[in-house]
Image 1 (cartoon, protein in one colour):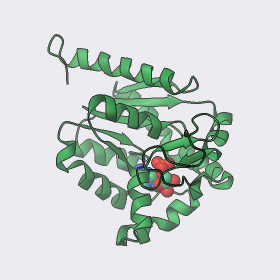
Image 2 (tube, rainbow, N blue to C red):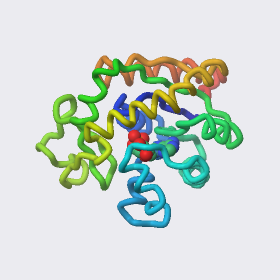
Image 3 (cartoon, rainbow, N blue to C red):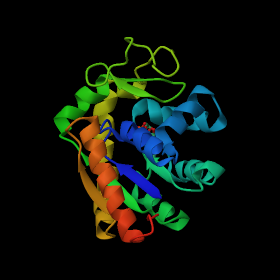
Image 4 (cartoon, rainbow, N blue to C red):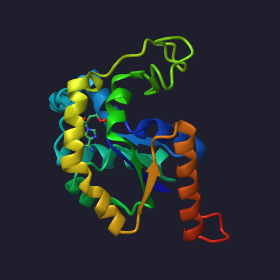
Length: 221
Ligand code: AMP
């Protein structure tokens, strides 16, 4: 099962992708996490993309496509995966078409005014990638990851100016992909404003519908 989660920055893609990964036993492939890890480890890729991340700009398609195609060819992706943060440009979508056929694109629709508040309050664990929010999803101990016990950080790109820039980039470059996948009959809209579990339930329902369609009576994909 190959799923794509779409939505503007801070729509909750990462949170939902983690829950889906647990539920369906397939990995979350989060471009942003892969790139941040490379930056933190100062790998050649990290050095190339650091400036883009810091400014909230998209990295070059060829580089990003390479990162993703390498990641999805690992053994843990054999049964499927959840793409979170990819594709983000038409060039990436076309490259993905060549790589594989996705089963479903879930487009989280969120009121734009909510997004800045969500992003600015977001706290992330650099080790395990867990995501919290100071108001909407606080960890049990303030500022501490529940999985690793490490101090949570605010990503540089979750600071307000960068968030506004990322929203602009999203509208210019990523939003057009919604129509691309809608026309292919692959896209379902998910109402993103109702809390984590409400959003998750919509996704599970959409996935069970495509599973049934793919293989009625056989347990699906
Ligand atoms: P995210 O964590 O998905 O919000 O991504 C954080 C940052 O990583 C973005 O603002 C971009 O600088 C970079 N990035 C993530 N995914 C992509 C992508 N598919 N194409 C280009 N740049 C990306």
